[in-house]
Length: 111
Image (cartoon, rainbow, N blue to C red; front, side, top):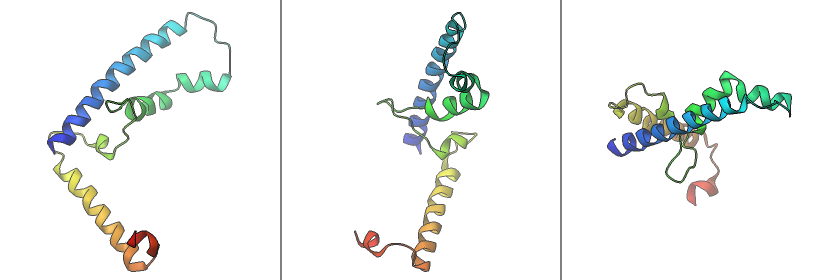
């Protein structure tokens, strides 16, 4: 649990830095004319795009790759055990259903 918490906290720190830099860039950008695509201007200013950028795209690992994860939804990162147990049990349930119904490709099972 501790390694997951450390990775999540590091990613959030990088996200906060990148979000602050983007806000500074957006303020600087307002000084100049807004030529270009109307769609791109609306997307860069929309609250939904900003929320997606902040919660998923800007939370990166050390190699600056986005790290999308269901654990971002956990409100209390000090208690990740129920989240990790839930993810493991969900994986077991889904794999059992696929195995029981025979919908898995036999070549993939034995590979």
